[in-house]
Amino acid sequence: MITVIGTGTGTAVPAIPADATLVVGGRRHVDAAVLPPGVGRIVLGPLAPALDAIGEHLAKDGQVVVLASGDPGFFGIVRALAERFGAAALDVRPSSPSVAVAFARLGLTWDDAVVVSAHGRDPRTAVNVCRAHPKTAVLTGPGAGPAELGAALAGAGIERRLVVAAALGTAEESVERLSPAEAAARDWSGVGVSVVLCLDERRALAPGAVTVAGAPPAPAGWALPEEAFAHRDSMVTKYEVRALALARLGPRTGELVWDIGAGSGSVAVECARFGAAVVAVERAADGVERIRANAVAHGVDVQVVHGSAPSVLDALPEPDAVFVGGGGGDLAAIVAASALRARRVVVVTLAAIDRVAEVRAALSQAGLVVDGVLLQSSRLAPLPGGVSRLAAANPVFVLWGERGSSPTPPLPAASDMRLAPRGGLCPDPLGALPQSFAWEVPPPPDPRSSNAGQAETTEDPEGATT
Image (cartoon, rainbow, N blue to C red; front, side, top):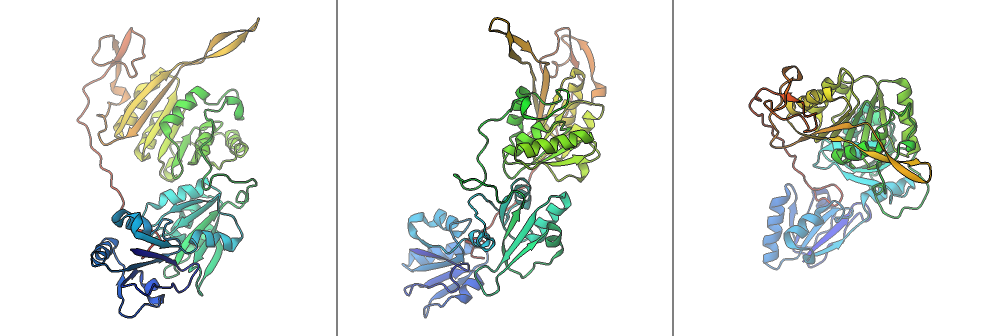
């Protein structure tokens, strides 16, 4: 049997069972414990050798005690132990989770908080959750503490209050309220920070009971009607187009979406409703205010950047997904800049057939796997006598490029393409051009390859033994 004891937030000195023959834990936990005479000790460094030692000790019928922080079953050591030795071999005795204690110090509920771990993980996920949600708890780690979190939020101009909780449940406990800029300017080394709360104080005390803990569930409906958004002269992405764009974008909690040429912000708002952090780029001043109003009306947080793409894109944090709407002379440059930085996908909607080739080329040349459709729809419209007709909407091209391990060969630049009689060297871009002509394209250059690395993950401070 392995007894896993949580300590630090509820009990200062854990009670070690008298029959324990081996105690495993971080140095501060082992040093603080009163150990039985003759008991073996393992002060943890890397986790894998410790698991091996525990296995060898269990094979000799030894009794193992593992000391961890707070609740070892919450982002903690229980996962690794259960995977190695089975859940039936564990006797888990949790203390109070550090997240619960931190919120308790503020007198706030935490059933509606989103908890995200930045320990041994890419901190951008935690930053994006903080951007999107009004009440977030971040479990910290090396390189992903209050300074890094504060710097990312301050650099983006996001209004939040950070609460830095350190050494919870001990005589050295501290709970400080700081702005992101103040947190970024501090040296936190040696402070023992375990959790940082990130609060949008305008929305942190939202009224109403919570049924499901954590992030709000996905919206019951999406592709909202155009009437759900304030817009000018019907300049809003139609809901049929928005439905397909959302399906390709796949917005989710922990990710960042750019909406470029946002107009009314309908796509931005819908992505935010799915829990993604969103930056909407709009060059018209009245459009900026309209996007902000639509975000408030739907209860989401959308950061609006007033400026023209692609020049403003360099200053934005790296996106997971990008939506580009409309046309204009800079469309190809905007798509190219977006495609080079998007981690997952770029989705483009456009009405002009003349733009299709250059958009496909821009996506492909960035190493994305390109696909698309020509979307045509007709809506029911009333006629006298209580009957209906079909009213056709303008057709719209929806193109997307996805980051893949085997990208398609880059297409030549649009300037290298020309119209040719049907039966030219290759089919038309989407299989949807008139039968009288197609695109004639020179043979493509050799394909390029891309590689992506993965970061290692380690145990978290909540329930961790390091």
